[in-house]
Every structure is written in C-alpha cells, then in structure tokens.
Image 1 (cartoon, helix red, strand yellow):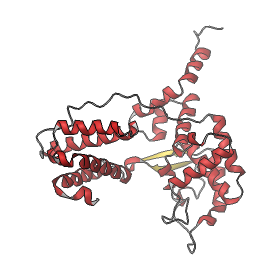
Image 2 (tube, rainbow, N blue to C red):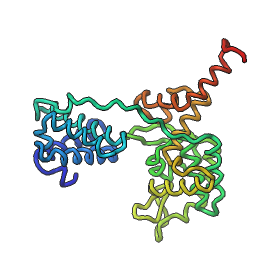
Image 3 (cartoon, one colour):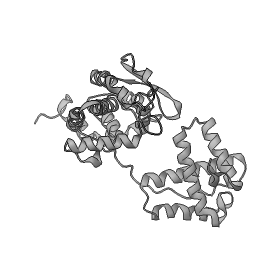
Image 4 (spheres, one colour):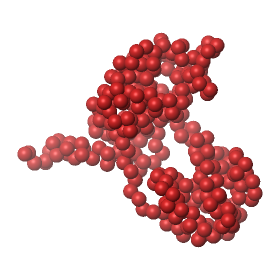
Length: 309
C-alpha cells in the first residue's frame, strides 16, 4: 500500500478494506489498485473536513459534487463514488463508525454509455491491414486481433496467456479472468491458424540473451511481455492503414465486437455472458441495445406473423 493510504486511522481503515476485498471477495490486483487510488482521492479532499474517519454526510456530499465539477468521465466519477460507498459500508460493519455518511447522497442517474462496436467489415479490414504488415510484426498483430475477436478476451487476459496454453493447437483456451475466475474461451480456425503462423516468428520477440519466455507474447521491454499500451498503439496503426477512425479501435472494442456480432448471429444472451466472463447478466444485456436495429430487423423479416411488405 502507498504511504498516503497507510498513515493515520483512516489509512489503517483503507488497508483493512483492501485486505477484505482481496481475501473475502478475491478482487484482482488491478481492482485493488483502483480502489486504493479512489479512496486516496477521497481522503485528500476530506483531509480538512474530518478525514475519512470523521467526515460528515455534508462533507461526503461535497466530495461527490466535486467529482462532477472536475470534468471526470462519468465512468471514473461513478467508480470513485462506488468505492467510497463500499468503504463506508465496510467501516460501518466493523463498528468503527456508527453511521454511513455516504448513504444519504444519491448517485446521479446517468444513462450507461453504449460500447463502441466495429462492423464485421471493419474487423475484416483491420485483420487485412495487420496481415499486410511485413514479417514477424504482422504475424504477431494478426494473431492478437484474431484471438481478441474469436474469444472476446480482455486485453489483460490476452497478455497473460502462457505459451503452454496454445502450444498444442487447442480448440479452447482456459482463461483466468476477473477475481481469478476461470472460463473456457473458444478458438476458431482463423485464430488457430494465426497462432500457428505467429509461433514460428515468436523467437524474434524474446529479450536479448533469453532463450525462451513463459508468455505467449514476450517483449524486450522491462516487464518481459507485451503491454496493453503497446497493443493499443499497434491497433491504432492498423486502423489507420485500414482507413478506419483510430479512435474507434481498441482491444476492448474488439471484445465488444465479438459479443455484438454473436448476438446479431442469434447467440443466446446467457451463452454470451458465459463467454465474456460476466458475473451479472445485466452487464451483458447492454449488447441488446447495441444490436437493437439488427434484432428488430430479424423480427420484422423472420417472425411468422410479421406483415409482408
């Protein structure tokens, strides 16, 4: 934990909260880091208003209002409010305070933004642009795009894939997702072919002096494996080459495309939930809005009682 989080009574409460999240709820390291940053942000604001341990409901309300005034993205502001609410529920449960100062403050009712989605044609153009790149760089990028689009992987899941997971040309991957939960992710023929081609060129990406690496996507960078930022840069370059707005392309957008295109093809929402590793079906239901026009067209043209134009 950082010094800012650990000092004083409130710092001790933050440490205890994060420990609870790690042990009892199996929160991932990235989640814990985000919670810590959010609570430090709240603590800095509340430092002159009683700190976290003595803040009043009015002080917490002022903090929530300040989040909106800073120009933060709705998602970031909502996450920080949620972190503080969960923290105070934990504190109340431990008996360290006899009230929850965040309880009376209502969260703003903002509509959830719809995810960006690439059309099927755009995905094909992106893959073609990656394939057109010369040598090992093209093989690696093609492999990454095919895996993301074929399996709906999160970027962290892609970059944490061990070499052993694909060494024997499997039809499925065992992926460890959020909270350490495992799920099966399918591989289609195109993804498997891309993996085979990339594995031939993979030694070119090994760090100097290293004979091999446990990671599917090793790198000569400090961490020894490819980073999410680098993958995003490579995707943006491919988007430009494909004539696609680079702002609409990212690893997460390919995950959204995977889910949306499955839904458009008639896949059951529960199946998509399982493939994406969503704990709550409500998270998956957003894709019914994204694919709404297509689904309405299916009903109009395929339903037995639909009027024939």
